[in-house]
Structures are given as C-alpha cells and as structure tokens.
Length: 305
Image (tube, rainbow, N blue to C red):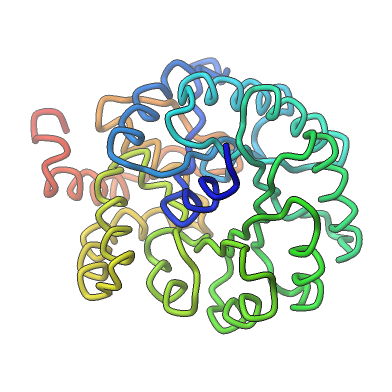
C-alpha cells in the first residue's frame, strides 16, 4: 500500500474491532467475520486490530498475534489494517513482526503505560518496534499529552511515523502539536464520534470508532458530515447515538467494551463477554438504554430484543 493511500484512509474512520471470546474464555475469531464484513460494506475506511475496544491489555501476546492474523485474513485487503502494538518492548517487537507477516499495512503504537516512562525512552521503544516490523508505517496513540509538546515533536519526527491518534480531550494542545510538526502527519481524533467535531475544528481529520462494530453506517454518516464541514448535521447524528457512548463511559469507562459486546449480542452477532477488569455484564438499566437505542433506530425489532 502506498503512503498516500494510507494517509487518505487515516483521514476517514479507524474502526476498532472487538475481540470475540467463547463461553470458555478462549478466542473465537470466526465470530468477528460478520462485524468486519458489515464495516467494510458500510464504507469504514480502515480497521484496527488489537486496539482498546479489542481488549488489547486483556489479551496474552499469543492471543494478540492470533487476533491480528485472523483480522488480516478476514479483511483480505479490502481496507487497510492497522495493528495495535504495545506492552513490554520484547512483546511489542514480537507482535510487530507477526503483524507485518500477517499483512498489516501499518502499526498503531499504544502509549506505554509503564509508571516510569521517559520521553526519550518512548523514542527508543518506537524505533525498536519499527525495526522489528521491517519498517512498517506507524501511527502513535497518545492517551496522555503530559509528555509535553517537545517530546511529541521528537517522536513525530522519527522515521516511519505517518500519523497520531490523539486521545486526550485537549483541543488546544492538539492544535499546537499540529502547528509544530511535519504537515504530512495525519492527526486522527482518537476519542470517537463524540469528540470528533471539536478535534476536527482545530485540524484533526478522521476519528476512531467502536460504534462501527454495531452501527457502522451511522459512523460513516457522521464522517461524511464532518468531511463536508457540516457541524450541525454531525452534531445531530452524534446526539442520536449518545446513549450508546454514555453507557460505555460509565463505571470509569469500565463498560466501554461491555456496551459494544452487549449491543452485538442484541443484534444476533454475539461476540461473547468482556474480560476483567472490564465490567460484565451490563446492569439491567444500562442494557435497557442500549436496547432502546437499537429499537428506536430499527436495528432490532421488539421481538428480537
């Protein structure tokens, strides 16, 4: 894939795929195929394996390797595949090599959660991952902008960095980062549909989405509105799916994946449970709110619910 095509895809929707489990808490990747097909057919621009909606930190490295390999097979080149990479440097390098072999088009580098992270240590981490992948393009995933603009500039200047997934609710810092880095870097709104408008307003393009597992057509409609600069239409579309995001944000965001998987089960595409430390299952009240949304939008009927 050319860098131009990858950059263009990043300005669209980065759909973060769920990871299916069976009743014995083992990966059951065939359950993901209908989710992938629905997202691709709806027009989602790029799909992400081993993202946070995919419960990356609840997977073993072996499982993460199986997840990205299965996702690559199911996508089959129809849209680009972005592979999440993280954990210890040796695990990250191993997963980078496996992702490249599986056919991933680029890597998404999770920001290391280690309590003793140095900005220059992150640079070394990214360089080693890049080498391990054989030089795949990389998208940095920033969930914490406290490392400062200088560090962000340095990491963005590394070989292979083509994009940044900005996942902090700080548009003004994002604007400053965009202004002080290579203009070829794509800055992706990393806080899903709800935060896409304010991040778009300061220069981000594209956004991440867990909703694509459940209602990809709606995510595509929101993106189309933002792409035209129609913030009024985008806001109206976002309000229609607000109950979904509100449930996912509850319990310290511990129902984020739970909400996705509960909705999938209601749609008849059961992808199993969410692993601890995520909450499982939804409470009756939470479940009722998601069910009402799906019924109101005619994604399920009363009998199916």
